[in-house]
Image (cartoon, rainbow, N blue to C red):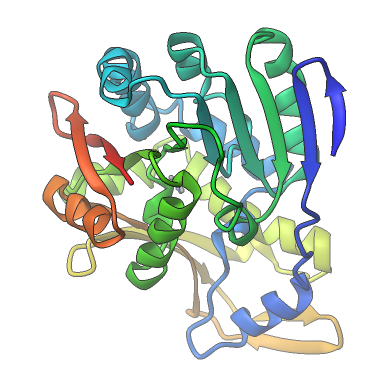
Length: 320
Ligand code: AVJ
């Protein structure tokens, strides 16, 4: 561990580097070509996502922030004294600021696979919150969810906002929720955002914003692959496709080939025929009852759920 400041300690768990070429080759040559959503988040992609959150059509981020602002005191009352907030996939550590202000926990433990992002976000945070001990942990999800349980009384409050839980397929989601239960530990809790089911037109608009930022965000994954692997996607001949799959209750994002795409993947050369779609993301939408049941199936005891007046988004609190 490295002491980076009076209240900032850095723990590097050295997340195993994935063999990007191997993983991307496998997923693009699969019978149903797909790409892990993590490839959205290079530097440009993270900036594009931040821009998406400011569009009129993309309601989740602002709706969740308003719920946190409105109910953080009520939520804290349910928690008693929360001494540690742990946030897997903390990224820019922006969303947690409101809780650090309102709850003044003893400790904040952001867990993030990107070392640079983690160091950059926590340096400023430790200055802004000198009274909070920040234990910055560089780890992948698997490492984050198997950390030893906290020895502090009251366990950890795991914060998992944004409805990022919606990126997981059902089977992965229940395993991930059980992992969050372990991370929270005895006497711990989970505060998690879940986007709600609603009319398809509203959902489709949120993933097809008029400014084309979501299209750019989706297509940017190919620029990321071109830069990182030299795939030679002809991105101008790829099309952003996003639609609500009512049956599966998820937004699906795809990238469609408008012509044959000759791709270079290391020593492989593959052709994706015109019309082929690469499945880049699922964003599952929930009901309050359905998500509450998923929390219970993962061993949590639901303690409260807060929704906005239009029932767009939900914030769930559950104890271990
Ligand atoms: C950050 C994964 C919650 O699924 O809504 C935004 C990512 N994709 N626009 C989501 C996203 C397209 C977002 N999450």
